[in-house]
Length: 208
Image 1 (tube, rainbow, N blue to C red):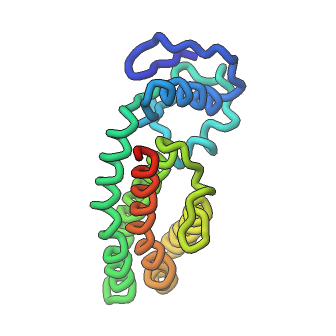
Image 2 (cartoon, rainbow, N blue to C red):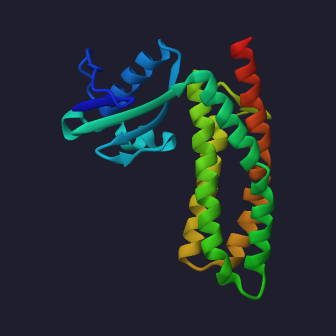
């Protein structure tokens, strides 16, 4: 497997990792020692979001992959710019959820299907960036809590509701979609600003 780190092919896997995920972990360790953090991962030309690393790469043997490309950024700069991005995006999510709930309750509910897909994509990006910051800070999501619930659990619950919403879209069940948006997704969207604040606090603690 060809490993490219920040455009260079000078990284050598010395531990013979059994999976591509283990190879990514080895690159991550190498970068951390140099004050850098992973920004993006590509496997055979396909981007793999942080949220999908375990599911996509966990069991994939290295001999089934031709090329692993990892790009990184200076850790402090990555955390700073990502937190700014989260602070800009998070406040928009609750309003978007409630607006779409009104659309699905209105006279033209079909008009909400495409915007919902866009909302889900934006939200997935937000969660991916949160994981990116936590990874850069070397803080497992199980250790970060919001109202006594770990961020890992918050992410799992959100994914469950988004999957339920996706199933409702397939069934054209606009009533269920409106209820999910108003009573389940909007309250969780309101948490995103607080999650960003919690990550920012941990970043400040890490930098002293």
